[in-house]
Length: 88
Image 1 (cartoon, rainbow, N blue to C red):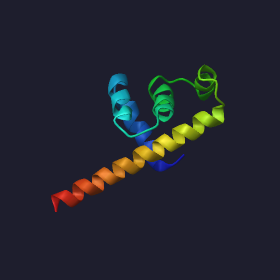
Image 2: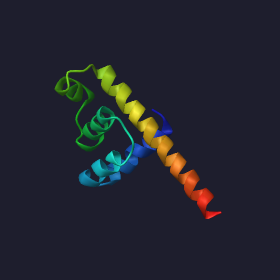
Image 3: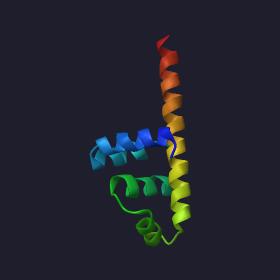
Image 4: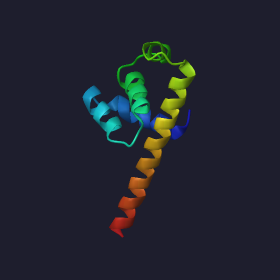
């Protein structure tokens, strides 16, 4: 797992469930990406439980979560760069 993704997971674990859901939904993610991240990281469902509930493969869930985490990391990085540039 990517260290950025791990840091995001730690951040989500430190939040309450509602706050974590709102945080994830604040990013520009596909619906399935945010749904799979919320179900795994907030609601603590297994990859297999998520896959079965949505009739997709476990690999699809993993790919969508990975893609979602990558987008979150990029948006966090971009916003911190923008914030730093504005402060100069």
